[in-house]
Length: 155
Image (cartoon, rainbow, N blue to C red; front, side, top):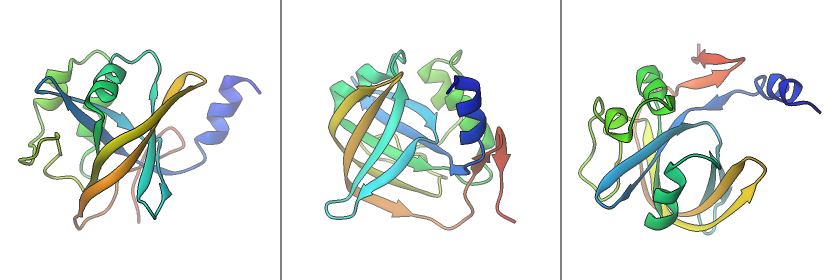
């Protein structure tokens, strides 16, 4: 199957939008991802994927920690900022408010899951990270969704 057909078919599947973050050498790192899913309830394990060529991989692998921030329907600008490869990490974090935590956790997110990376593997053009969740918080609101090549909202 060619990449364009694969992408077109996958765009039919609606996903939530997250900003996945870590901290390395006292600097925050983060990127926008819809490649996140729960893997196990006992113990609580999640996975997320990051492009192999992303310089952010080093921060995740050396910090061994993560926070998955689930975006609200009002956070398109946050999603766009953290997805923009032209922006530095400092620029990405300049317009968000963070909770007081050792990890960069977005204050106005729909919720977050945080924990430790337990494995990672290169698969195709991405690195797949598995993480054990150690804490999290749920907030009220509606999620920001992505499908058919654009942002969507619940009716």
